Image 1 (tube, one colour):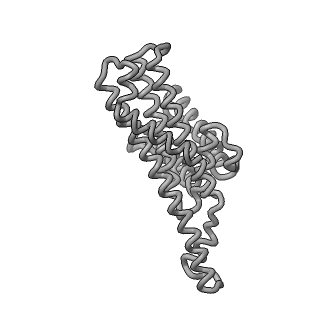
Image 2 (cartoon, one colour; image 1 turned 30 degrees about the horizontal axis):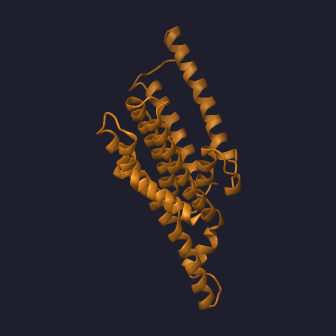
Image 3 (cartoon, one colour; image 1 turned 180 degrees about the vertical axis):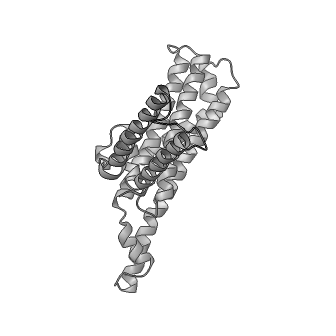
Length: 244
């Protein structure tokens, strides 16, 4: 069972306990089910009922229901990508990386939303300038998710159990085979680390683009192409197309 699901279940249960202590403890709110007035009894009863419902739903959802396992070939929606990343959180070599990648996805969505809002403040959605910016944002998002797909492919085939045996020298292999296997796993780890950095670079370029956009009240077509952030983004997209 993925560690993050166990953590969520523990947090949920602790939250239920703390809320009930606050409402029913004499040292805090001190609700009375029998000796209090009708409103107090109704509120206390509702709280207990909701606590039971949330407790049952939460523990079933986090501890019993299995999350859909998605392979890279089945990736279609953004939610699919998030699920495919999360399903590798139990691999302790990448646990921190998985949660960082999920944060990167959230940051991408937020930055795109902010840039889109800024564009609508400066341009009409029918203007050529708006369409050009929107096209670039779409391409940069596609590049981000292309890197994400590559990360998912590597995460899915990474055998954490075998890697642990090699890392702790528990595998009964010759030294040459063990060294070769270690080299392969280190390449997996290095690839994922570099792909995370590539997506971080994309997020940085979006920040730069937003900063440059905020300096202008209006932009002509020629000025758009000449913006430093746009030039860097175009270069990044062009390089990626060469290697696809």
